[in-house]
Length: 350
Figure 1 (cartoon, one colour):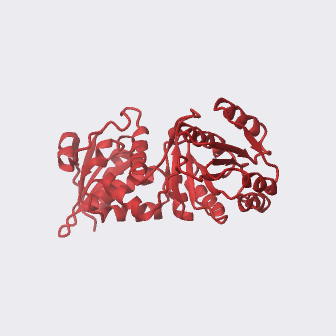
Figure 2 (cartoon, rainbow, N blue to C red; figure 1 turned 90 degrees about the horizontal axis):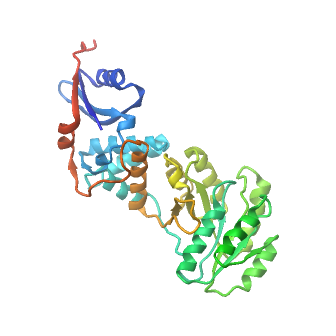
Figure 3 (cartoon, rainbow, N blue to C red; figure 1 turned 180 degrees about the vertical axis):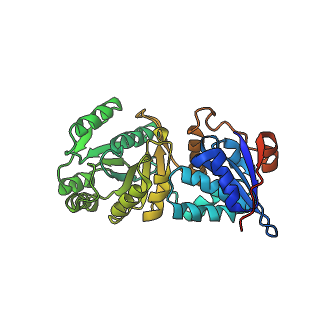
């Protein structure tokens, strides 16, 4: 990564230099303004270079930490108001490195309640919009439970999507399981009443348009009838604002947790934070592999922070993913080795 330092008579002129040299793709690492003279100093990099993993582990002053976390979150498409609030909280945290401060901020601002299908009496119904990846997520959970030698019962209410039952049945057959199909909420409730309590019950449901009252009412009937926890499933690649709207709509059904799919195929993960914020949902886990028996990750605040910084890095194909040392690096040491100074004497305004 190449860090550039821009100095000018004031902050506005310094920003003019940044845009002139780096264009609109500039990423601000830090800004400093002399309170007496008004002279400004900006450390910046091109956006495609700003994903150097060392920045997350660099000890920074609060204002520098704010800038670095803010740029990271905005790169992920996190809505500005949320990104600004989280960045300010990270700047106020005791840890001096951005990634540690962001971890602490996420732990304070959001809830993380991982799915544990190895525990007793786990009964989950996966719900969400069409194409969210519910069926594959359900298969991953089933495989995890079976590997823990738990008894598993698979059910589906998805008779709407062509091939949905056949897809789940094919996966179940590989695992030596059967799929029970329920056409009505009453049938689902009756069948579940006969399942032993220690059995892990996983229910697939059809994709539902959150803007359709008819479809949402139909889903509510199944959720209300089944003695199972509804878990929202969202695709990590959704637009962040749309994810927030979807989460709010499904949250009205009493949903408390969400599972995010396809993190391996998504470079910008703002949808995760936007959905958690809008509906107050706890993150229950992420999936990141097309392999049906692998790729489910219980996710806490440190995992999400690592994922955010790892995905910032993955946007730059020239750098290896998450290959960084744990020790902190001082910002000035990093700048000394990679910095070029740009100090153009523009006339002071006025």
